[in-house]
Image (tube, rainbow over all chains, first blue to last red; front, side, top):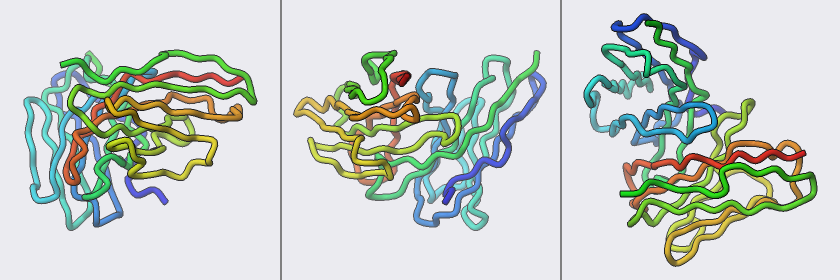
Amino acid sequence: DQQVKQNSPSLSVQEGRISILNCDYTNSMFDYFLWYKKYPAEGPTFLISISSIKDKNEDGRFTVFLNKSAKHLSLHIVPSQPGDSAVYFCAANKAGNTGKLIFGQGTTLQVKP
Amino acid sequence: KAGVTQTPRYLIKTRGQQVTLSCSPISGHRSVSWYQQTPGQGLQFLFEYFSETQRNKGNFPGRFSGRQFSNSRSEMNVSTLELGDSALYLCASGGGGTTQETQYFGPGTRLLVL
């Protein structure tokens, strides 16, 4: 039962362009969504989060959009840089279970110079 | 502020042995969660400890256990190791609140079971 899904295993974009990573979820009880960036054999690094009461959150080059009716969120990176190349994980948790993150399978982003 | 630390970073064990991994959370954080990452299963939640008590548990066999100390440091133990336990084990710390908390991860412990 995959409650959080990232249907695109990989994405390749040109440096300077926009990267859009997508994530879908099935559990309507999730109220907090997070994006992490991960390199092989390292721990995930927190990027940005969004509460279920919002539809957009920005932090520098990173913007997360949440569409609750569609149970869909996306991470936009503008402009994309070669250093952004990594695996990106979408995760979610719910009230009372904040320490239990449910992760998607990840999307490998490659930004080409 | 120092981040989440995990020791050791790498471990090699043989089947049937047991292993203990350690995690020190960010100063002031009271919640520690453990995750297993494997190529086939992705990142899966093992358990969470808060105030020295297990607060949440994932779907792993009883061979996987943990504990938390009064200083919030946590240990995870895996007994009777199997080849399939080879994975990256990650711990994450959080403030322990009940809503909309961000979890911050350590660098992980890479366990290889031969």
